[in-house]
Length: 384
Image 1 (cartoon, rainbow, N blue to C red):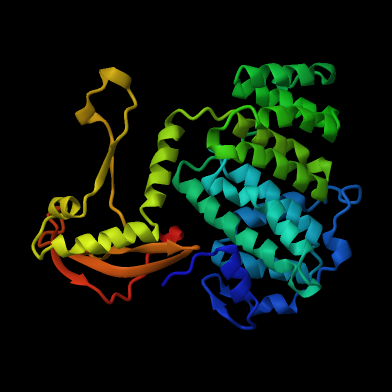
Image 2: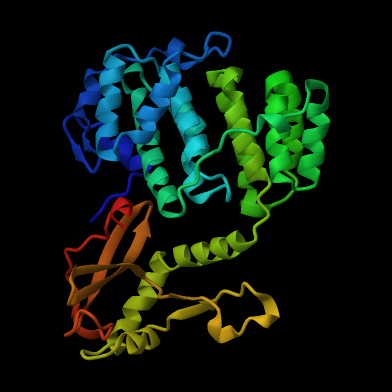
């Protein structure tokens, strides 16, 4: 099986000396300097921007996932502090991961505070573990963001930043009007001139204004506040720009994306797999893909983008099959559909449908066999 990097599994596996994990050998963590309880309980009055902050953020952004943890381990042995790493992790996330929608891959930013709280609650010897898990999660989300368009926070338009005495009202007006460009400029001015409590008193109103992203907007307000309290207000400007942009998500095409994603996730529950297991007896050797989809009662969702003027036959469609975890192609002439369910981040494969075709240039797949004792795993998200 492929074990996804859930927090529980990361901490359980990493805690075993010399254990091999999908991230590599984490035994080097035991050789890192310990983080004292005093250091983990950060004083925002102490932390200041270090001259090396930008290079450190770029190190997180540019180092391959497979090498990042050991690279950071080297930096820690050379003196990199817990405070600096926590700040760089948050800054790398807000600069590289699109906050619309506030959720899905953006959880890599939302969990930074959670990782910090887990560090506070850990023994001195284990305080690096939650932060290292969050570093790996950031790399996974960064790769997903790149596949989905590679969003990056652009420099603010300084010519549009309002004067200090106008910034607060300009920000409120922009948020009320759902004006992303004006809000970006106004929140920049607000971050540079107003105090933390004044700023977040305003943000709390907009975090609770609507229930899009099922409450994740409010979560982002709370967690950005908590993390800035830990790393220092001097890091606030890019965080608040990301936060304002996230709170202005009104759905649009993303509403459809969210619905389809949630529907797809529902196909991975154990109940969905059990229904697929009961239907697999209907599948026979030689069946086409369309016949298999019919036998397994595939659900077809039509995405309407152009309203009534768009013909339904021209609208994008997406199919969901209960219990289907992923598809793998061992060769141009073979394809395997892996069925199972996701249990707390662990993908359990129960059976596999094997397809074959004679011509690699044609999509004429037919069922070859059903493998009831598979050894397959779904590919890592970075391989997708």
